[in-house]
Image 1 (cartoon, rainbow, N blue to C red):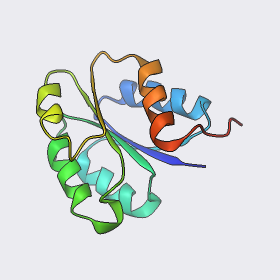
Image 2: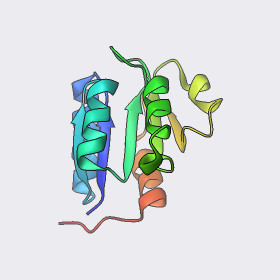
Image 3: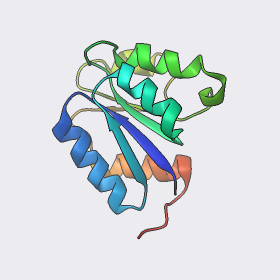
Amino acid sequence: MATILIVDDEYVIADILGYALEDEGYMVVKAGNGRKGLEILERDRPALVITDFMMPLMDGLEFAKSIRERPAFANTPILLMSGAQGSVGRSEPELFSAVFDKPFDIDQVIDKVQILLGPAEKP
């Protein structure tokens, strides 16, 4: 079962996204900021990362760059969710596999995850 890491300081968004992905059969782990996300990255070795842009301690751009600096995660797909900074993410295609503007369409996010990871086995 593929694990997805969701990093977002808005817990409601992380929960909604997490429940939707779990319903599709993926394992989900969450963090409220980029620093905690890096700890979970090393511990749980997710197959894909979804991150917000605006977060305390480390923004989504810094977080994605930190992921890319780790050889084991250099090719891990990263999806960026942003309310106002989507253009920043789109200007960094080497960092992000896709950028979604908030409010996002959950079905489009799931479709992109399935393209990148393949469909999960539903429980």
